[in-house]
Amino acid sequence: MNILHYVTKKQEISAKLKKLKAACDAAHNGSDEPDGAKAGADGGEEGEGEIGEKNTVTTPCGGGGCGSSPSSSSLSAYDKEELQKRLNPKQYQVTQQRGTEKAFSGKYVKWKEEGVYNCVVCGTQLFSSESKYDSNSGWPAFYDVLGKEKVTLQEENLGGLQRMEVKCRECQAHLGHVFDDGPKPTGIRYCVNSCSLDFRKHTTV
Image (tube, rainbow, N blue to C red; front, side, top):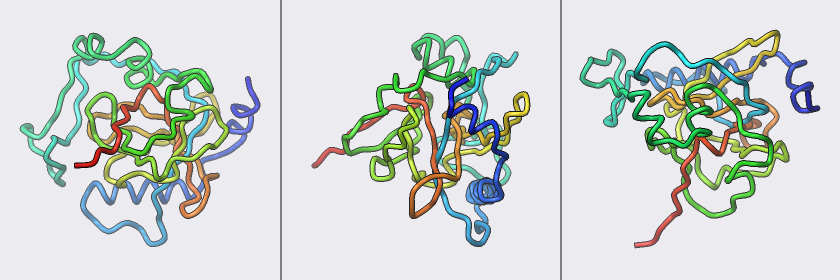
């Protein structure tokens, strides 16, 4: 167990992160976010998870946006076999089985180009290069998301290890974890696997 994992294990999910979760849920549902809530990003060492029994990944949002009472026509689904063909083994393990890439091994840890980081599974725009910073954690770190409605935060407790998981709201792909030790202005750090991201460089017309 490395030092980062040990420190993370000693922490419980803070009130700040719970408020952030509520703000993300409220943004997704189209209601006002809780007072004082801010979007942010953070993460740490990722956890391994077992793949589900279902053959498809579903989410109550289509490409055109989300409503408070989605219909079956707005559900987007990804066949597991299709994903295994489209994604490389590490991308599939991380996004579909809640895996992790080795610290400092990811493509985007030291990435400096300006652009947008999209979900590797569904293409949703998640993070901007403007909010990326070097956290020295070994994984890409962002202090904000492009919109609270773009991510789902979910509390997890694995063998006493309490963390806040970050998933793509559109397709429910596992991205990483969020922590409350980020820089200003949010104080939040989204710690994200490079394997879950697809960078698109800004282009000029």
